[in-house]
Image 1 (spheres, rainbow, N blue to C red):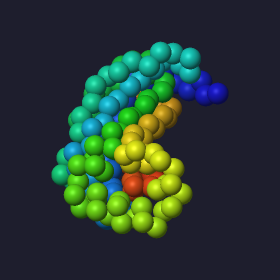
Image 2: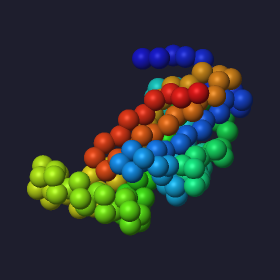
Image 3: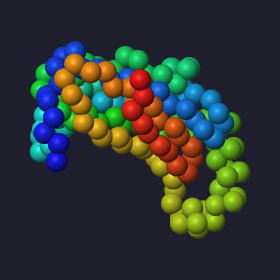
Image 4: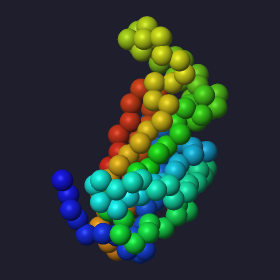
Length: 142
């Protein structure tokens, strides 16, 4: 359990998404930002944005003073279902993924991605998402 220093209004968050299945930025993905004060605190929705043509989401709301944890929610289902190129790539991939095809799950495998991380006052956090129809990874960027 991390006790960390609470964030100040100068603490900021940005993100970008790269669709690794096509080697391009993922444009138009809705991203929402929530924050809480302390590990047991209630999550407060702060707002959101969408990724631009370069896959970047630069205009997320500022974090309120006292924030210790942040959650980014990426709405990936609409992205995968709405992009013909990605949709075709996903359909082709599913031909070779019988475990997913046979699961009976509707839609895409990851309809949303939620990333939760701890923050320290006064720092900037860039959290990129590397995404494909059957997996994702995330890291703290610069």
